[in-house]
Length: 240
Image (cartoon, rainbow, N blue to C red; front, side, top):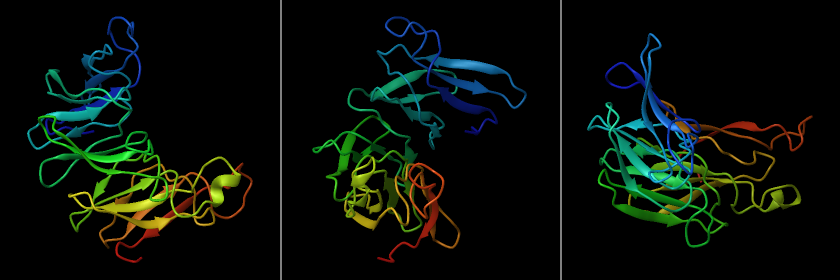
């Protein structure tokens, strides 16, 4: 991501100089200038997290926030000072900072039914689980959320939903598009049924016309792919 100082900031899932048990393979946070000068800001060593898959987000306080697959949420300054805000649990997806200043994200495997959660976390590390998925309302949310113009959050789950037609292939349920309020009230906006898509795993985007756009990895019209070839879809908020 492009920082406000004009440099780019990102993560690597492996490498670095962390000690045992990673032995230099837990991942890093780095900075690179537009001219290509690379600076490793932090090497994870498992005690502070490992394998940061998701992108960073720069908050209004100027610091960067991110997650690791070992279940940590961290903040890091542009100078490389890292603070672990949350430790333990399942792997976490990328965060977004909402208009209220808190961060929101998804966990693909946690919750009361191990189907994933939607959570919020403050800049000081106070975690609130807003919703635990139970399968019929979605399962395995792998994508980051997006805060829409109405103030609510929208996202996808890669599995679960009302339609179980995907059982004859690999996944249980074809996935969903959901809406959730900042207080945690979740509404399933759409359950995919394989004909219109299957396994959405990327974040939605909201266009200037208010409509959301997204993709599914599988599903759609039959094609030469193993489980169809995927779809691009649009969905209008409020159009149930």
